[in-house]
Image (cartoon, rainbow, N blue to C red; front, side):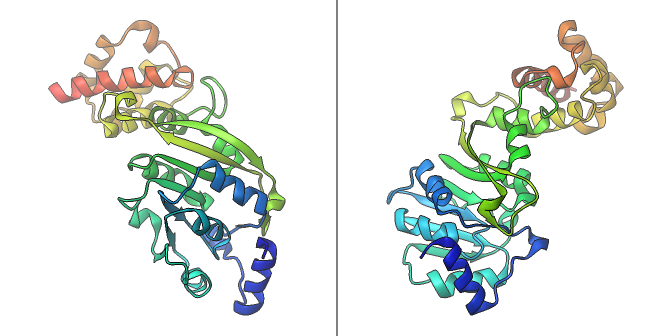
Length: 280
């Protein structure tokens, strides 16, 4: 049964209606659902996490290919439908939970999901802090473009820097609104994330990096010098600490605007902050 037909069957049997408060938009394009599973190279050796499976349109494809699927769903109605309709699959575990509280299962090595768009940022960083090999995720197109933006562009910002430092990012294809029921207000994109191996991760405390990055991009159009002064409260600096950080960083870096910094230059600033704050 094709996904659009399956969704209609669920509507008739359960009175299924998408919950707009939870941002539910169900992907019914079978070509795209199959594309996501193939892009993640899902096989019997994989334990796949699906976040926000809804009524299980993507789940049906995952259980056919994966060794094990863990579907984490917040909506109790959807949990009941998943257990009733797909509960016969021995390789499927349906978890009734908020993913942001539940997190990535320790044994999951891949994530494939049409993310609820309102948790895109939080869910992405939760995934990137885990030990998964890769994730294939659907985002709003604008969000996906922010992850892959170049320095100096309008979309470039804290999200870009943090994601690029933690993972390789590739927009695989765009997704039209008509691929969903109900159609969202914007187009979407399927993105592949591959967390970087430890040898490629920045040699700086992640919390310090996040704080510095957040502070810099709150003042993206000011100079780095002024942005650091204005955002010292974000990364724990007092007047003396700020002064020492500014003395240690080169003038050419301090004169740039955060929106023009490369991810590697943001790391350089964070390393200096960590060194000075740690020694003060």
